Image 1 (cartoon, rainbow, N blue to C red):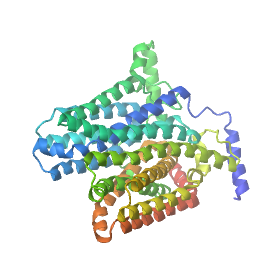
Image 2: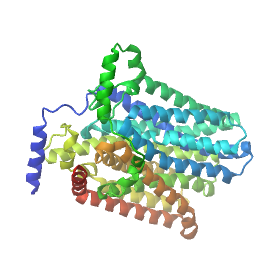
Image 3: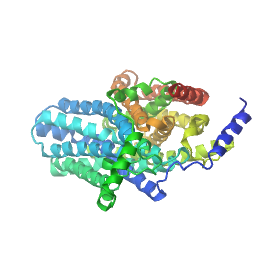
Image 4: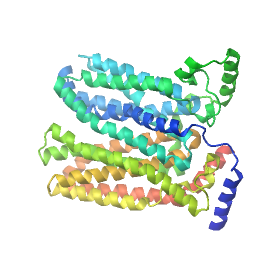
Length: 497
């Protein structure tokens, strides 16, 4: 089919659905609330991981164990962080977002309190950190699912950008404050109590205000939520009769999908689809840039610039600020690029019927101008490596960190948005597959960084790392733009058949 015929075909499709029901009936005000509430809720995942690092020496002294033993708790946390989303994201896609979200926050709050009360037990530390990870790590997957439920493809960036920036902004200052509190109180109790308070606040807010959004439970929001899918506030003010409640429950049960244990492996199966695999590589490789720098920065500023622990903590802030701003820019570009691509194909970007996305070039829309950002990221990383190699003034690598983390975050969030777009029926599960890939590649990157630096030096290490991440990332973007829509359409047709 010629390009002009394709455009005419897509335009005809959207014209036919002009009078279809809206993609979502949730109000703009509620969407705004969900944007910032989910950003706050997501710090349960991000802050819990980063705030722990300044506590390692104190925990080693308090529990009378080695630093290596405390590092083992980091490994256990990371394993749970990779596996938890695979289970709970698929459960949220099948059973509904709200009940799973409340259970996860509760599961996170209890061990957080336990960690605050634990004074002497190392086995308790490992167990409670694992439970913390299980409870908190799946929250971002469910948050992405909520965004996919209430926001059409053309408008998702307006939610994703502020949501991620809220999360990153709060998480950026968390480790510094946590380290200061731990040093000031000569213990970790108040740090874990702060995490417990955050969890309880999140649980209360979600209980009273978070609506059920899963489209297989409430449709576009027009199907009444019943039972455990209702907010606590609606239960308090409801005047429904028991007969109406039972009727709504039966109708809702017909829409929900049955969850089986095999669904927990859905995130791993997604990795095997061609259209998903190339997007997942972009998600993982761009995120590994940020993660690698988080691992490298403390060592670099200790060995080369002789910074103390507090100064190193402050040096991490520009990179985290770059993440926050990168998330804001990514959200705006995601919507703008979609609108431009839709206009180029003679399709109004305001058309919101998600069911016709297989006929729209989502990969071209999301990855518009992406090669430019990949090239910028490569040059920045190479420049950073040689800056620290030649021991230039610390202001230079600190400024470069800001732009490197901002660019890598922009690329990672853009690819994550595309990943959710191409799996509209299982958006939380799709995001969980991205988390599996991110954790795997980032762990590998962290494992090899020091041996390679010892062998070739920092300048050549960051040059090789930049070329590897940049060329493979550009290759994945090229394949997505070239073949992604065909692979996606083929997958959809096979699944439908």
